[in-house]
Image 1 (cartoon, rainbow over the protein chains, first blue to last red):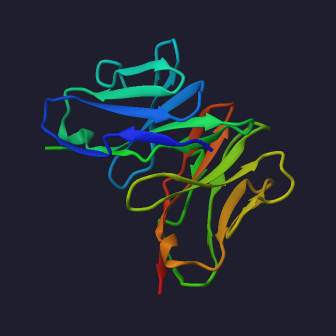
Image 2 (cartoon, rainbow over the protein chains, first blue to last red):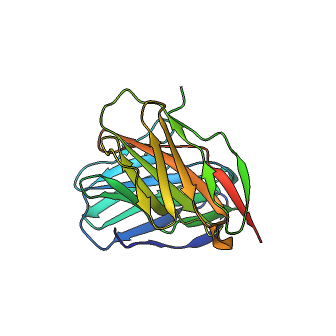
Image 3 (tube, each protein chain N blue to C red):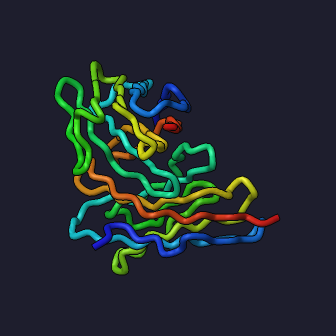
Length: 114
Length: 113
């Protein structure tokens, strides 16, 4: 498995501001994933981040709203820009490891937008 | 069609009893992986168990076992000897290709003392 940390663990933000979430892994990984989980819902993939290339966004998510950085093989950031109350969610980063491509998650960032 | 279907939004089980959480999947791939995750109220997603499509034996991890019925495309999670700490949301997920993951809608398990 992997040890994955996220910062911040939670935040309360004002409408119109931006928040950057950090994800750190204790081993080098090729791909990192960012998910959103709205209240009472399942996980929705926002984007996949490879080191050294632009992130690949899923339908309904755009780079201007959710810019992602992946400067090295152990770190990534997700920014939630120009926030609205609809962005209130848990944001989770994840990685895949091993020949079975098992997916492991960070502890999540619980965001509330007021 | 839904890739992962979890038909039980909520389940109750008595402490120390076993419980089965249902999961069916839809794929035309020959090679895929099936996962179960536990999400307590804290929000973290905890990996529980993995079953590969080519694995002939059901996966087991401690009190967790995965009842894999390939022909029926089902991958039910069995929790034996339920504990109060097992109360959480449980998500079934499937991996296709190397990195395409699909998640079910989840089952909320409540363990009663």
